[in-house]
Amino acid sequence: MRAGVLGLKGSYSEKAAIQWLGTRMNEVEQVFEYCADIQDVFTLLGNHGCDIGVVPLENSIEGSVGVTLDLLLEHDVRIIGETIVNVEHCLLSKGNKEGIRVILSHPQGLGQCRQFLKEHFPHAELRTTGSTSHAAKLATEFEEMAAIASPKTAQVYGLNIVMKNIQDIKYNHTRFLIIREPGLVRVGNDQSSAQHKDLWKTSVIIYLDSDRPGALYEILEEFAKRDINLNRIESRPSKKALGDYVFYIDLEGKADDAIIKDALYNIEQKVHMLKMLGSYPKFDQYLG
Amino acid sequence: MRAGVLGLKGSYSEKAAIQWLGTRMNEVEQVFEYCADIQDVFTLLGNHGCDIGVVPLENSIEGSVGVTLDLLLEHDVRIIGETIVNVEHCLLSKGNKEGIRVILSHPQGLGQCRQFLKEHFPHAELRTTGSTSHAAKLATEFEEMAAIASPKTAQVYGLNIVMKNIQDIKYNHTRFLIIREPGLVRVGNDQSSAQHKDLWKTSVIIYLDSDRPGALYEILEEFAKRDINLNRIESRPSKKALGDYVFYIDLEGKADDAIIKDALYNIEQKVHMLKMLGSYPKFDQYLG
Image (cartoon, rainbow over all chains, first blue to last red; front, side, top):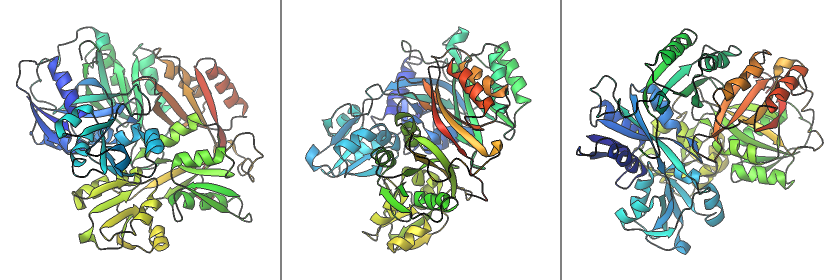
């Protein structure tokens, strides 16, 4: 099982991959393909360089990862699972706090620690990296550099933990998606680990017909009148015009449940585009 | 009229402020207070250091500016206007293309040029600044540095335009909000420049009661059954738990129209929180 993950050894995506694979295919040999950015995970998957990809989708402080949403629309992939990782950012450096002039991290890492940075390092230069783990690797070069990354990367790259748990809100979780190419043989038991309807979710992308009043409402009505619960609704720019959006919707249930099938069929008649991203077992804190 | 704007002289926010003020209070002397980041604009406004603040809200390529959304919830401000600015990013430097090793910009600037950077500068170091104009100012320090910023900042800081129109999609617009403290004397004619109902919009933030199925649908129903058109619906993390959101809704009409009042009154009974951000004239490409 080759998993394409964002970042280097010790990354949060690697942690997510281990967590998800561990509950599903403990016996299978796991190889990680490390990718410099999220787009590279999708590209590697498209080139058959890995069997599954693991990418961050949303964080409890900083919100959606826009690139991931955009790539889910642009690429032909299926979501086969999700997992939630507890994120405890640390400030890592070879030097000490007083000497730090440059702080590196993924934009999400910088965003999750915005108040911390403003308070403790108002004059530091902030550098963006493709992943938090790459930031940790770069921080080994100079004592005046520090990375915002996981404690695991401190071990991996031999950095000091200068400050612990530095995100602006202690409660900090990131949801990762497990994706694969469509049409391939199913990976492991990804379609069988949950039986009860409530334990599944289905993700779709919808592009409405122009901005007809009530268009979104009519879509939600199809779910509401069938008592289908929505877990999430997120808008992204269509990139055609400002004020024109595509909607990402997560709903409870499996795409082949009769009731969900019926709702999606009816919605498809009303919208410009409906893209099915897949049905997959909902993250369970006890199962992963 | 003192306007707090994001960034330095030549910034997109300054352009937005000039554009908005120009159509409304041409005769009034305009003083710009330049702020290092978006949070500083809100703080300055709270400290009466300016009469209005001008901050970016959303971009047609990169989507919402999360910090602005969060600050609209945290601070007690009113939106009194909006304006849309055409964004044409340039790569600016003292040196030439071949020598560029470091590229600086606001995270939105880097995000809007993601493909460009991957293609032309895969190995450049990317640095985050509080604004694109600050990036331009910093890029004057070394020839190996470049900024992603407006052509205007090239003039202001004496930089060469190395490459023009580098955003990933040529069509690139950012919507800015004009905010003020609530309860102050009205700014200029901000309540009178549009008369027809369709030319107004109202922005609210809604926090639903837990994740009761169909809760969002019930809110949208209140608008739909009154034929109130929604221009935008955007979710942000509540920051309490992953999967828990607040919703930002822009609707057509004024808060003191009987029909809007009625809808909002009914919604208020159903939700945990409804925050009124204000009613203001919709951006008109001919009026600004």
